Image (cartoon, rainbow, N blue to C red):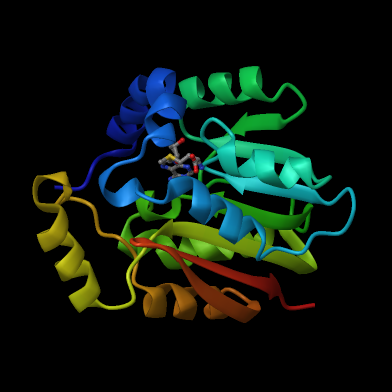
Length: 210
Ligand SMILES: C[S@@+](CC[C@H](N)C(=O)[O-])C[C@H]1O[C@@H](n2cnc3c(N)ncnc32)[C@H](O)[C@@H]1O
C-alpha cells in the first residue's frame, strides 16, 4: 500500500540523522548516487548567481553542487528534520517546508528548479500536477533538472526488482522515462534531454517555454 503523507514525513524525519552517512556508502537502488548527482548537475547550464529551487532537498547534497558553481540556493522539503540537517550543512540556503504539490513560492520566481531522488515520492496520479507546479515557479526560459530512480520501460523496472530481491520495495512505483517525458511536455517544458546516470537512475533536463 502507498504511504500517507504523514508516513512519508515520519520516515524521512527518522532517516535524517544517518542520511549523509548512508548515501556515502549506497546500496541497492542508490548505487551510483554521487556519480548520478555530478552527471545531473552537469546537465543544467546556469547563469552566474542563478536563483535555484531544489524540491525534496533533503540534506542538500545536490544543491551543494549547484551552489559550488555560483547559484543561490533555495530548498523545500516535507521533512523538518531533513531541513534542519540541510540548514546546519548549508547556512546560506533559504529553506521552507513544502512539497512538489505545494511549492510555497510565487509564479516565475526561480531561474531553475532541480530535484534529486525525490520525485518518485509523488504518487503516479499526482505526477502531472507536480510537473505543473514545478513549471509554475520557474521563469519563462528557465531550467529544470529532475534526477531520480527511474526506468526506461516496465521490463527494466521488473528486471531491477528481480535483481535487487529483498532490497526492492514493492510499494514504490518508480517513474517510467516515457511517462515523465509526457507530463513534463504537457506542463510546458521543452528541449528535454535524458541521460541514464546510474544503474537505476535517470536524469532529465530542459527548459520552460519562453
Ligand atoms: C531520498 S531523499 C533525497 C534527498 C536529496 N535530494 C538527495 O538527493 O540526497 C528524498 C527527499 O524527498 C523528500 N520528500 C518526500 N516526499 C516529498 C514530496 N512529495 N515533495 C517534496 N519532497 C519530498 C523527503 O523528505 C526527502 O528529504
